[in-house]
Length: 131
Image (cartoon, rainbow, N blue to C red; front, top):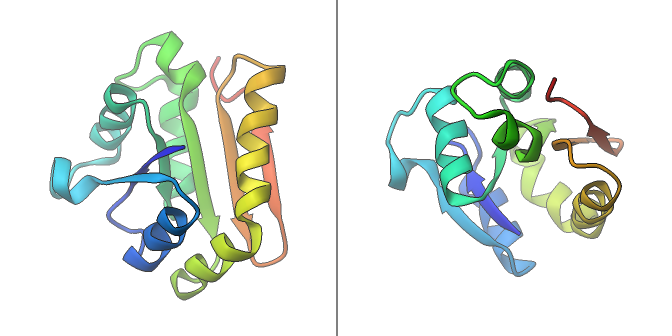
């Protein structure tokens, strides 16, 4: 997977994804201090899944297609963490295959966006954020 690492995601989380063989792109290298809408646009242009701790704002962007085309909003991916940032890398190591499977399976069954939420207790896949 190609992942766009939001500025609020720790480098250790990105490194954990890299260790699993995923390509990571850092928002700070593309557009330092980019607003969430700009981050979503960068992800759209780069064909990347956003990795963030700012789940709520990105769901709003996807649902309302803020600055995105309908097709892009439907295809945008999101990996959102709802745990302490210090646990991000550990959760990626523990659940990396579940995260990968959620995207693989989600894209096979629907053309809508796939969002994965990672918490301390679970990995949850959701579909159909775009209207």
